[in-house]
Length: 76
Image 1 (tube, helix red, strand yellow):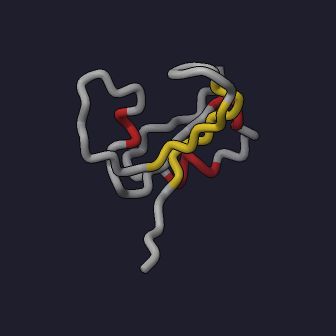
Image 2 (cartoon, one colour; image 1 turned 135 degrees about the horizontal axis):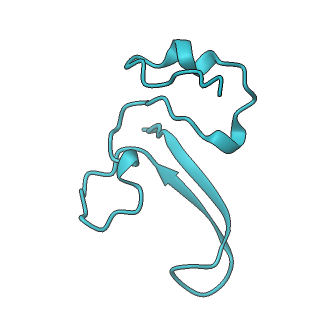
């Protein structure tokens, strides 16, 4: 039996939370709902549209994809 997961983020060269250097793979759908969670946006098991400004190539596709119309083009 195999299960599939949805990767939320990959953090390379992490040196926190223990000795040594590691790669951390964050998965979507954590059911714990901890008050101190560093990634509360990863708690939903469903795919979500995310905007990461450093990766933006100014294609403007996110404007049309956003179901909440939360992204607008700023011409200023």
